[in-house]
Image (cartoon, rainbow, N blue to C red; front, side, top):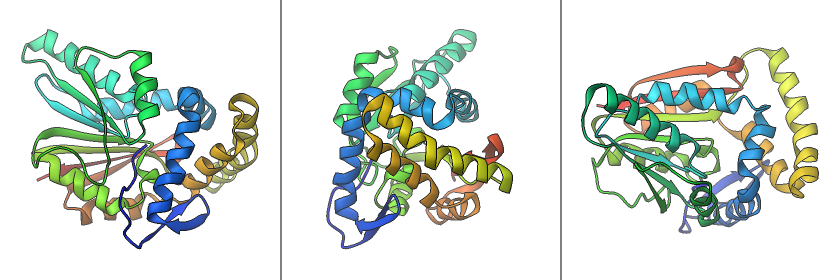
Length: 258
């Protein structure tokens, strides 16, 4: 996933620990080096398989169109990018237009390699890069998405500012992320499942309990829906909306570069 690359003197959360932001980069890179080969299975474990429905809902919200340049940051093995490419092509077949361009960008080369091995769509390209220093010019993309990656970034406000920088006027921002269940009963049930079951299953299935423990803790440390909405607005986005999924276990944050 994506992280910072230079020492800033800032601290950042790594699970329940606070570490130097630069150290977080290396720690998170280690997590995703470890889980790259089982990443799609990991998402199934962490969401009970429901992440596929969440991703479908997020892709529909982004509404890819023919001729657009879409940047999928922390794109991992390309799950979202494949959806975008297919949706843009389907729209192109209905009403014409140019081919879309879907850029998968991830800080972790192992994740990109796993995605390339899995295969892509003709509209997709793959790139290793940093969410906090995107290798793209100002106002160069029509839509920016980041799915289950923003919580792994060492400096979230900087990543949001970079998203705003690379979007064209009128461009769309979308973030799909684990969030805060809105009902206490759901929250308690999800906590019990995530903290007790997921690390054990990660140990059994992937031989890596510690990485799964971090991922669960990183969900708990991530800002709630209202707080994160404010962070997106602070980065310069307008008309920011929140769509809760599965009672707030995950949420789609959407905004406009206006």
